[in-house]
Image (cartoon, rainbow, N blue to C red):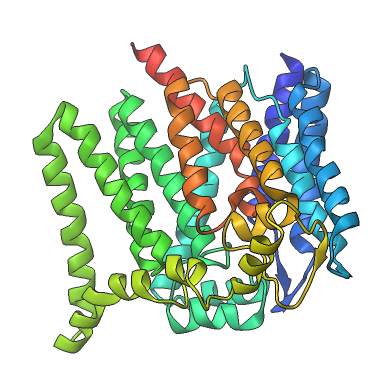
Length: 398
């Protein structure tokens, strides 16, 4: 029991530290900041977890991914080597080897609420152009390249908070919204139920303002989840809730857009993201996309990943093909999926959540591979524990 409390302390501390880990200092992007943060945060959780429970087959199988990276690097026809590419996969090994069973504490809820509050504060600070918030993001949370901050925050006021990229923020806000919806339906105390409902709505409302294909798709998906759940219990509540949500968004646009042209532009923005060949699904999977060189390589050598190697015409990230498949091959990607499913089935107390959460990761793989995204990966243990917390509440109240 004492060891579990120590592990809980490290998970809560590492989650807060990891989410708010700076990726730039004074507006200067630090290239290896996320790698350092990943090793400190995930590495500490993995180390304590290995002390509190026996090392599992997950760890042994996970090491096969690292082995494949080295093998493919050795046989890759590419000449440039980027050794930094190994670190996200070491993080995957850390994460998928953690044992979270038997951990339940009110501190999980407190930590999740704490993280949620500051993400919410920064996100709405961007939306309403709070100068101190924008200056904070500019100084400490720029990532990848300088123009990204200008495009997302300064020009389009996308509430990316500490996550820099609208795709990453979309999946994280959807995750938070899902957690609060799950807590809402399992909690019996009225005051807490109202709190979870409010936070669920707030994180859901943030999604369309990220103005990306992923955020729009996840927003629509969440509406369908609400309707489906309430249809089984109370269809009137479902319709009223959906109408209030849509009305709230319509009022925001009504308040902030004066001309007819602006309203027409706002109404068509979703279609423009879904149909653009510069971003979203078409920007990743159609001919002429930035990933063309990656696909051409895989068509020629479908079974040979490139490991740590790289080339100017081969782009990484943005999909499971241009990250997992290109680096560790199809076989390596299947190993990752197997380990992820086993990790979820072993650690989630509510087994009904295993398939939906696994499908969520598959959906994310179409747009942005989450397991190689530090600020999402560091949240996974906390997300698992907060879902388990909701499950224990339901059993307690049954």
